[in-house]
Image 1 (cartoon, rainbow, N blue to C red):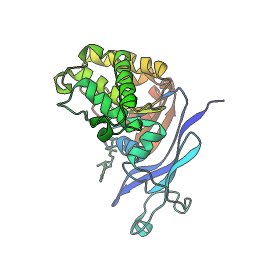
Image 2 (cartoon, rainbow, N blue to C red):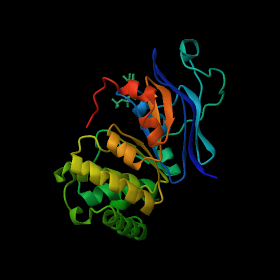
Image 3 (tube, rainbow, N blue to C red):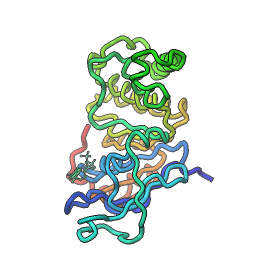
Length: 280
Ligand SMILES: Nc1ncnc2c1ncn2[C@@H]1O[C@H](COP(=O)(O)OP(=O)(O)OP(=O)(O)O)[C@@H](O)[C@H]1O
């Protein structure tokens, strides 16, 4: 039987009077690539922000590898103002910071590339490794744990080799072409040794050749790093070519789920996208 890695249950995020994500449930099993798609403003990034601890959900529960990782229910003013479903179903408040979630084995990239632009490719990845290892930036700077730092540097180089950025290791991050900056951002996420990788619009801003290379790259790192992947993407060709299963959000609500074939032919999905321009 498939081993569940991520289980999202009745997750709702309400900002004031806006229900950005409305009672979303989804599962991602070990080794799968699952896509979360939907028109602009459907709530995809908000869903990622809850899973990675950026926002505490207003209501609902999220488990990672069978253990409850986050749980919440309407509190304070929201008790009266809650517009979502399943009110009263959850009674615990379990919160985690993004760092704690990274340490559990979940890493993400962002819609807008977030690199240390003036640092080298090597240092960008090395800093990300410090998130995971006992040595922090302070102890690394002052060489407090030489052996561990040597190991970090070795692993950083190995990772750059695996993602095809070894030749660019001494280049300044901002000088890389766009496609390679995206690859570096993914390498930084991999440096924290995740089991679950969340990619937020990895093909945004890429040309067709870069997008094709990205599809291959995602499949390659999935296999080489034994990853489970949840990806938000507007680029339908990429989504359909790499995903095992797809969830579709519209106005915060799940409107369809299934294999790429099922989703492509679902009238609800087609109508949600009608008139909506695809971001390339
Ligand atoms: N911090 C916030 N405060 C208030 N409203 C927010 C906040 N973040 C998101 N929203 C609203 O929640 C809704 C969902 O936004 P979200 O960015 O999650 O959509 P998305 O599907 O990722 O869109 P896109 O494809 O354009 O990136 C939108 O109506 C947005 O304006």
